[in-house]
Length: 210
Image 1 (cartoon, rainbow, N blue to C red):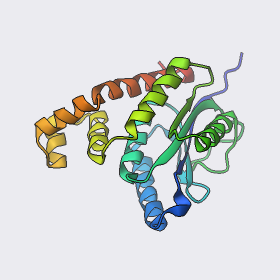
Image 2 (cartoon, rainbow, N blue to C red; image 1 turned 90 degrees about the vertical axis):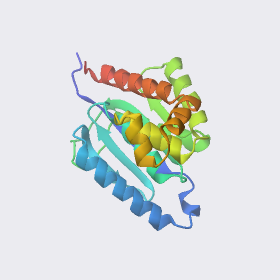
Image 3 (spheres, helix red, strand yellow; image 1 turned 90 degrees about the horizontal axis):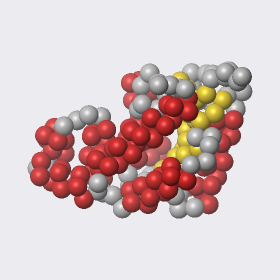
């Protein structure tokens, strides 16, 4: 029986980074985001690290905060887009504090996912080590619709996933509570929150976490 521990490998990259006029500014912003995430998340086994210019990676031990973190990255980088590939698998090298210099099936699958995303217009791919047409369809549909979102809608979802109530969301964004509810309903944000929570549960199940 194989009892080797599994992890969630995350590999991402900035879309069209070489053509960005403010590439240095975007990279600095990315480093700032990672510094915050690495500080506050205990489930990040190997810290977010920029590896190849505009590419980055991290390793998670569980998925509780995974999608909340991804939404934060996407929100803070807007209007710049970022591709993210997630995969569950084992590691063949020792686990390091920073997500660099490691290798294993988890990263191999995540790397294939990034290569596939670069050939398409999609921005998110998930590989849980088993074929799931439902998961793939949900991710593809959600990804397609989220491309049309405004920064405000992303920020609302980001705060919803962090447990912030509507009253505080409106205060933080300096808009009315009615405007918050309108965006939640128009974007089906409650449904997105449920989908991301369900996907986190599926990841944890594959990892053997109840």
